[in-house]
Length: 493
Image 1 (cartoon, rainbow, N blue to C red):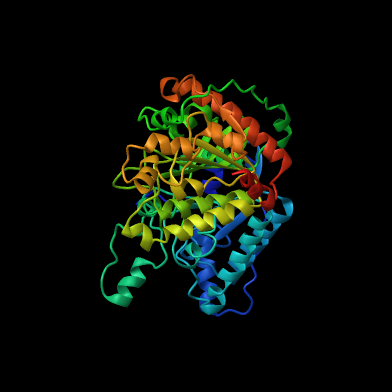
Image 2: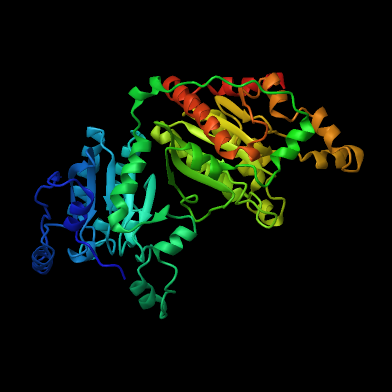
């Protein structure tokens, strides 16, 4: 088990020296029993705190932040009515002050000495957190060992970004309670940080000493310096030669062609990876992250050609991950960047049972109506509904050899000609390539490949990154477009 830091240890580790200012007042318990009063007095003596949560503000690398920190030494970090009063007051104050909120819960859950009146405080705490989020303010969570029960099921699970301590016990039902109720031990490898990460429930497993860095990077993306946007240069587009459609399709399938990972490696200033839907699903075919190109941030949703295989094509889980990113962009007022690069969504029993068609529809509906600026990048292959699901946007940029089609050209040939020999002809007739889509008004801007991204991966990615920074800066300045305007670009098709 990890070494347990006290609340004050964690405050000293994360915040700048001598910057902590407490917001806490003396807790009021009302009329309580003598035995409970004695327990509280013993807890104060043991923990050195007056309650199981400390709240306040401080500076983290010079940035003013609000903080909620649990103290396990005080009655196992349990949450009573006075604790909830403290939490709700602090969350509300952070919202009023416009501060990002950092939470580090550690708790066995509801305080059993207070029973149901303490249990129902989960509702008040959740409402306060959601009001903070509705105000467009970041809420970042660090789950510590252990975090269970009503804390995990309220303020522990509502973060925009949620990470956890290595080896921590993290879950809903405490293993001791499970054994008492069911007469058997709960499996040891389920309620762990590492398992929650593998299941797409949390974003990362992070050691305490690394917390300041990931928090600072996440907040730099979430709270951009809007004054710097006007200085972002808009590069002049190079001429794009008229390359044959089938040659473009062939080049887009080159295994050496750079995908989203190399795009981020060469073009991004900073990347804070996120993970999964937060609801128990993840798909290696989609990369979700907070990203900066230059000084311009975005929520990044990229179809990862490396993560998609014949055995594991892009599934409905990837689109549910994408919809998490859309919600994140909406709440934080950040531009959303989607990257299309897929050989096609899964055609399988599991995909049908997972509601693939419905997820494509919901992605289309969410994107076309999203109240955040949107940019779509066609980077490579664009096969079928899995590609179209990430297309609707205020602006669309395409790599020269990118394309979009309802089916692979071979599939279209099989339907029309009952063979695959006519695939090049079908691709030309269906006007799938970026240049054709630019002429139709579906694509706004085509970025040249010289002559092929696979032969100049670093140069191409840096060139594309400069275009993305300029496009995102413009979108962040202008704000989101109207749904009708987003849909109108397809009238020419």
